[in-house]
Length: 142
Image 1 (cartoon, rainbow, N blue to C red):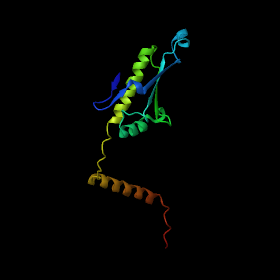
Image 2: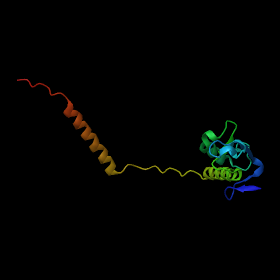
Image 3: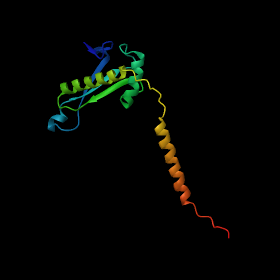
Image 4: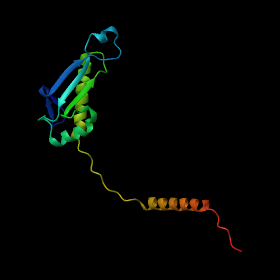
């Protein structure tokens, strides 16, 4: 099966690895017996389905979720069932890759307006006046 990310990016199931682990939290006695939490691993560094620019942006976006080897690890333990946690992990992976696939908006350099320059200068004048008024008064010579 193939997971569609965007119109140009699709990740095959073979590139994903799921591990089921015991989850902490609510669940009573069942939580100690059933491995409902899912650890989804995606080797982004060796993935052939991701373009290089998307891979680089994904690495920046993932932060601590990406290992030194370039493996993205998503832990899903929000729900009490294994199937819901699997779906949650897959959705979070898709959202993260979609975010990485969007190129950042280029910054348009702007110039300060005339009014903002005048406000800045007026603030500087007021601060200077405040500091001038704090100076000790020099004794006058008579």
